[in-house]
Amino acid sequence: MATDNTVLKSETVPNPPEERKPVMKNHKPYKTGDTTKKVTANILKYTFIWGYFAITFGLFVWVLMTSFKDNREIFSSPFGLPESIEFSNYIFALFEVNMSMYLWNSLLVALATVLFCFILGSTVSFVLSRFKFRGNFFIYMLFIIGLTIPLQSLIFPMFFKMHTIGLRDTLIGLIIVYTALNLPKTVFLLVGFMKGIPKEMEEAAIIDGCNYWQVFSKVIIPMSKPALATVGILVFISAWNEYIFATVLISSDAISTLPLGLASFQSSHLSEYGLIAAGVIISIIPVLIVYMIFQEQIIKGMASGAVKG
Image (tube, rainbow, N blue to C red; front, side, top):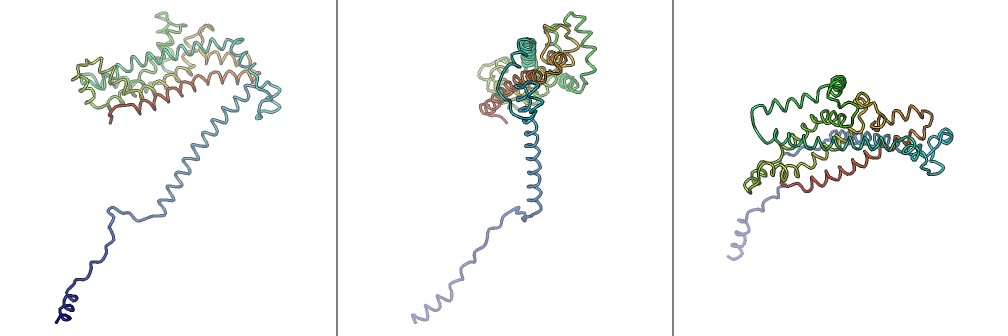
């Protein structure tokens, strides 16, 4: 009987369930064509990036090497390394041709333009982005329209206006013109960034007893450092490289900016290619320094920003 019960029990035991493979939801079949397209797109993208970098950096290195050569060495070995590192071209360009004076004038104009764009652009952007009032959109659209106006159409109106108020052939007049030209771009970038700052940050500051000026200076401005750094780079480069309005508004050599001084320098030393290359390098170095400084500020501002998004 025991054996019969054992047999019955063994017969009644159900079979173990079969192992089922997990079913992946939204699983797409592997396609070789998609991977090939992705790899091809990456190859084209990085080829373009590295090719553009190689051309740009190669030209910069070539001009830098040329700035240490004289005409004899330039014609005998145009792409070779200089025989010796001598700064005679730089010394002549800075002190004999007054390139240092042009450099100082451009630096003063560019930094003052950035400062005025920061002050005016940040305050206007704060009002347009954080307050709702009648005419808000209309004022914002006026700045947007300023981005679409061709700069060439403003040359003669600017000339006559600066001449009428007595600011033609002055650095102050040039700073005012550069500020007006860069203000629409500044407001456009800052308004878009400040609209993304959470309202809760502003409300928390007001609950803690801050007025709107303190909210602007202690909350909005610190959180807008990445946008301000971007604006600073764009405005500085624009004011540093501007040539057309400087040609129209400035006639005195003593207050000429670096683009004007470099143009007159090239015309007077047309056959001295080493000197011209040294002048070009002198005009490039400050822009590189400012860009590296502001790039660090962008990284710090993004890392130290409060809860945002």
